[in-house]
Image 1: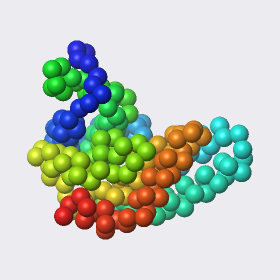
Image 2 (image 1 turned 30 degrees about the vertical axis):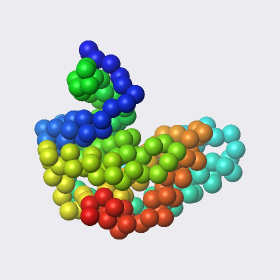
Image 3 (image 1 turned 90 degrees about the vertical axis):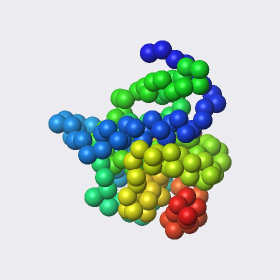
Image 4 (image 1 turned 60 degrees about the horizontal axis):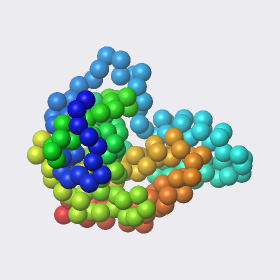
Length: 206
């Protein structure tokens, strides 16, 4: 593919790309979607159990798993949220640019038939939440405003975006529960717990 990665990018370009993708894939269910990851509580827990074996301290592994199980139980995700094919990894490294224009979206190996909201939450995670800081709600609002030009969020999607953002973080924890970044991901969950679903909604949608 032609193009280059860029360190500094207007996130609106990403929201536009994700919105256009969902405009095409919303409602589409591939024949072999059951072979792909489901990006839900079961998937997270399965990965966490597997990767916790890499933790040298058994008490530490047990503590991390117990915390994760407790937090997963708090999630509220209706089963009837809109689904479609999602990219599932909107990390900055997966986009190429030429002269400031986004020309390619890469790395569809994580793509799956899941809640469209997962991509949206994933986009906020990577583009409106600096790694060691807190959510930049002004950026999150702009991302959603741009995305909505291509596909409008349903009322339930707006209500449960808070939970889906947690799900994105939990998936990261499931994959890397043994790694050094676990504490930072745990911090992000505790930050979301501190502001509540209602406060999160008000900061983004009102």
